[in-house]
Image (cartoon, rainbow, N blue to C red; front, side):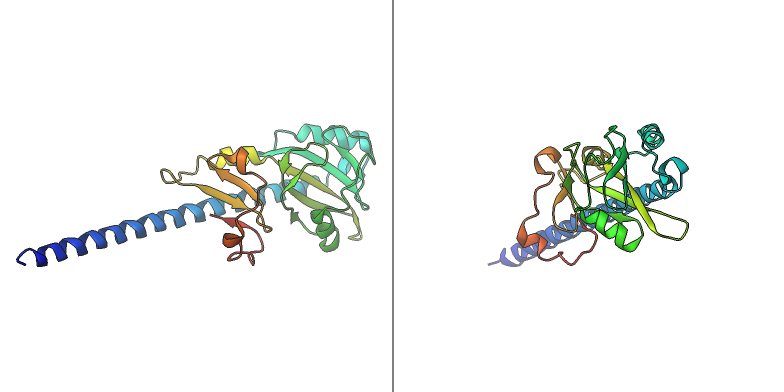
Length: 221
């Protein structure tokens, strides 16, 4: 009986310590997630700026296949995280790309990002897809090419290397033994650390995604 008060105090202290440690871990995770989200936002802004400049380049704006192909190939390696550039006409047919595809060889008219860009006339971020020609897991950024009167002449797009993005985010200073998941607006996994290659493209568990499905851009966990 004499020990009961001391045991009660010790038990309470252990509980308080575990609670404080749990709160500290949660706070650290939230800070890391916010930092990574900010980093991804900056990455998107850089891609948007690059595509905005390219959309005004004469070789691209005039959609001359030979000149356009040569110019796009010169851009490879100039925008970190990208591995493909392409230009389409207003109907979604490819005009030129960094693979040297023949004009009209394929169409992206069915892609959501193409429809959104041509409808809004502004920069758009696509969803997770497997590249139609490259077959690589990716997501696209797209910028409409506008004529003198504002008409949509087509668009220029770039494909993001998700493996590069995973490697880049692995240096974000995550807590030890932490996992990182980045998903698009549909819940498809874009980046997963660790074991990125095994997870990319898979859907988030429905029980988790249900709580954040109203997020318009995506999610970082």
